[in-house]
Image 1: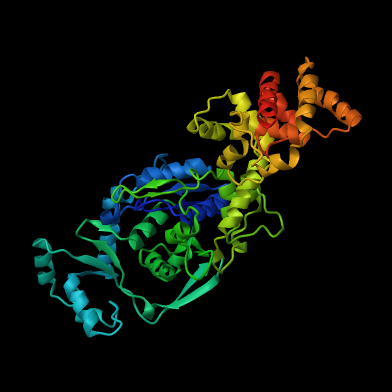
Image 2: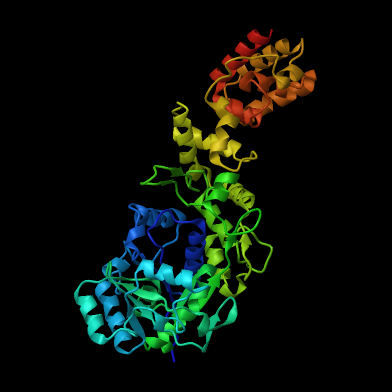
Length: 505
């Protein structure tokens, strides 16, 4: 028998910005699908209309476009199993609600929020289940004609799954092995609400996974308690033979202390928890994102991939192709992964170093323009190439390190520690000699300068480089002096030298 094509899905809710933990879940689904030559589906779970946030769906799609995680079908793409927004699948879900009701595997409940709250006050640790459903107002306790009358009168109701107690439910998890839970501890979950004619997550995701031929459900550990219920629903709907394999990923944990990673942790420690900047349409609050903070998407992918999974080697820098080749869902940790945001910055630095200068240049050009500098892109690219080896984690950190490429020093002062150390009584005369030497060069390339200056320095015993740096930069920073002077050009180099000699006497 031929194995079915691997089909996995990522199904976020459009209730706000995409959390970085959700990005990791999507990434693991993507790696798993690509490794097995399968498909990845993007489904939007928007059945909770009260929590819908305008712009959230577009934000999710743009996040994955930036990260380079590509979906094969789904919202914004299309496919044979649409629609892919759950709010557009009401009629489909209603059929299966009716099936469960007709087969006595679900029932209608009319309990109001006030009645449920009163019962919680009356019964300690109240749970709507086999032991309490007989005390409540539902189709199991009310006469059939009363149930019909209430529905005809427009009384709001929910449909609850009828969980039979006393059964050991086994979940075959690719990460955690056999997970066993007795059905007696499960409550009769709400599957459908008449108020908005929409199912809850529990029914909708089961129906969609089945009809979309999903073979593996890879999701966060927080959904593990729901897995036994989903197994029972698959059986109740007659789909036990096509039930997908489950894999519940470890949580992303706070960098310090205990508990799950939250936005507050990012605000407190100064790192993003969202892939892109998010503008809250209700509060107006702005939350920073990895893209706007200067992270390269490849660095974010590499960083996230190793939070809860490892390739079995010491190799840390892994391209997307290498991740796809090496990924093994069985090597995911069962324990939560601490979110080491400092390591995330290290990954970004490593990717800056290995990324082509021309690819990085547009980001630096944007920063230059914000500082009032307009320069040809080839000059921007050249500066990036000379300076990215400095100890920077982000491109925006280049500007204070290399503003002198574009702006001559405004002052030359002995108050500067580097200048005071390297400018002596004889230095002005030595710099005048060096200026005369440079002025005589027709070829002002770094190589030609070096061929002229090095022998002069050897012959005279003058070590001009630090003082020369003071002239061109104004302090002790910058790249190789020959490269810097070649970039500035002969005229600008000599102008700066003459101004420094005059200012410092």
